[in-house]
Length: 154
Image (tube, rainbow, N blue to C red; front, side, top):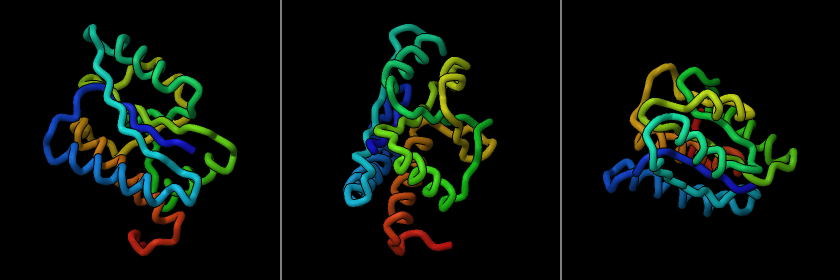
């Protein structure tokens, strides 16, 4: 199952982008044997301001995929439960899993409505570059949990 993080905005060249890239590479390498990956980081820029144009881009990028909307009102998972959720989707035959991160004003309701589920890193609002890095790390962690690697410790 292919994994994608689709985010509105540029990740920049800071340490958060480097961190997200590093975890995406790790998840891709470790996930191959498990039928997970590659993990793609896809950054989209809307030509018009507002949530609706951003939603159009996100929904087009996620077409045909199982969509999970990243939103502070979303569901929270332990790392192990998150790994189990991903494994369940893979085992059900999903071919592509897309995580959507909205722009500065969050996700449009149309993206949340189209999503099969939601994901939150708690009730706080996170900078987009940091949210990308955190999600990439959790996807890498999920892969290592499923592989039985000692990276994750309960």
